[in-house]
Image (cartoon, one colour):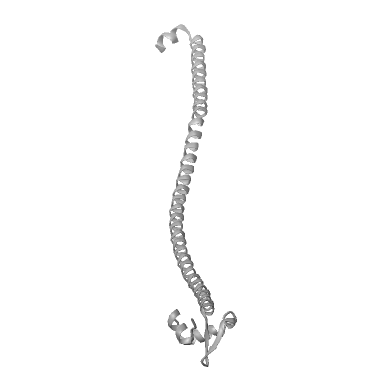
Length: 174
């Protein structure tokens, strides 16, 4: 069977312009026939045109698939960016909480150091108390020793005075 551009367009469901364009392709030229002044193709030529159309449809579908894949990749990138932004915001919040906790820990450490220093000062006072008590004991012993020495000296002086007195003085002193 012989097909002109009109029959090719109708049979392959393409436009006449596309049919003429496909008939001019180098793959189809060997199958061209001139019939009644019209350029036509036989069955093999029709198959060659179909193959060219399939190649174009495949290329178009590959381009469409590439566009779809590109759109999917773009959407995935946007989703990933949004997820990462959310993660960054969450991490910032965690850092703020950790900063607050570190501030509280530093305050507790400062308070602990102040309390430790006060405790050390109390311990110094308590440890120095025995020394202070010892010093006071020494002073007390010294004071008692001096008092006893004075009393002995006084008693001795009275005894000496008492011996020098005669019997009559002793009787009258009492």
